[in-house]
Figure (tube, rainbow, N blue to C red):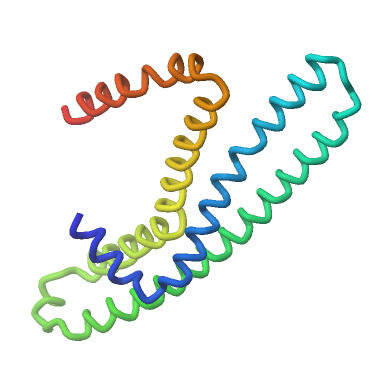
Length: 179
């Protein structure tokens, strides 16, 4: 947890970009929850009632939602990658400045390959976490919660049937992952 706190202190100078990225993540998660509702309407209203008069409008709206999803995804990816690049540049400068302050005996004890490998791999892992890992975790969590809410709103009995095993699976996963 201390590592995450330190990471967030390094990300504080980018709070405006993080705010925009968070808004885009919310929009992305919301936009991904909309298509199943249009698909439900197509199946229930058009196919189920054999009423083709609404098919064009529903398909057009579905295509518009998918296009909006792509725009949101493109903007989100652009902003997160720009943030990641700026963050990694600043972090590399900090690491370089820190390495410059170390004593010569440290460099005599530590092999060059090990030092280069640690610096390169750790910074690349942080870049991946900042640009991809954290965002995907947030979107997946929002999608899970949003999907559960929509399921409850559509049919409570079906939602209970589908969501009842979730706590049992969570307990089982926690139990077996600790062993």
